[in-house]
Length: 470
Image 1: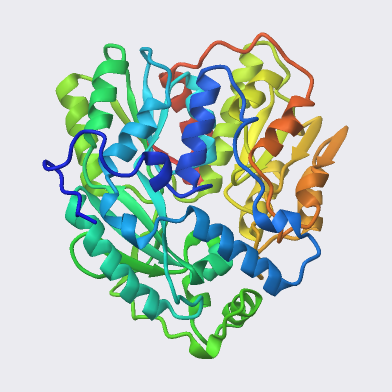
Image 2: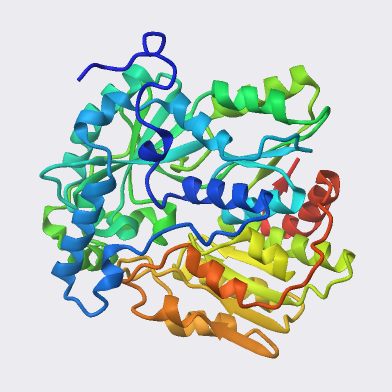
């Protein structure tokens, strides 16, 4: 198979965007959900239950085998690596949005609350990067060094045709489970605005429409392997700390045991950068390019720096309550979403306040509880815990999720479908739609928020959470 080089490839050549971007990855789900909401549609067609959902009582080896087979069907093959075109991925993202003029745009790291914010403003949300999953024949969950060697070869081939991206390889059995041993996870971050984004901003923004950058500021130890490729063991979304990925860690032994690995074989490369930007951070070149474009086209640019996911989740939840009450609604009904279990359109249709947990870790749920404890009481609280499909000592148990629902004054609901088989089953995105469709309508929907008003509320409510709005 030929290598695909820019300038030598016909328009539209290479793999389609929906084939490149990992199935179920945050950016993919959030663009799909936001684009549907801007069309007045819900997420009833999004996601499919994974293979483990069909075997709720199956032994762990059977589960792992099912997950591995499923990964083999959707991951990029070695033969397809040269066909990856990051520019075509960017075009796929922007083409999902209705062809109309918008009063602004959000661009940044994948975060469910950012999607809700975009919908409240009536603007698109675009990711600053995307995730890929590539076959790793003969891989092992407990061999991060071998994963790095395999990833270096993949990165060299991808970067030959995509010099405008940085590839961060992530080896994290705590968040990806047995997939870590059969696929390599690559988070691609654009180092400049892709051409499709530049055209989208020029064609679809109204005169003077603001550009909002929402980068994830979390850090993690990183190993720089050369221009365009870096490597990390573990990730913030695992709910663990970097020290927990040391071979002497009790947490690591538990994780590896649950996914069929052995801590005695774990030898992670030494990281060269003790505190680099984590995998879903925004590349500095991308941010600089966005600032340059906005300045040249006379579009104001604002930055909402997110120190941890809960800060933005709390800020946007407070913003929704303000928005709903300004429109004469109560703002007293809360839905706590998790991971891919979200539906921005149904939230707006029902007049609910959304609080998004990045995942089902204790850390995420703890922060939701702290925010609820400090907030005005909600009359109802619906909780949608996404089962991660893996076992980990960092996960919240169902009693903790029930405690979150317990903050509701009259209604306290934990979705039974999501809870059934938790944490090792999987639930499709459309489950959130099914739950939210059962909520009473609260129409008409409020008129879109203005960006200046939204930033003011975020600055006031998110400041004590560490949210930096500029």
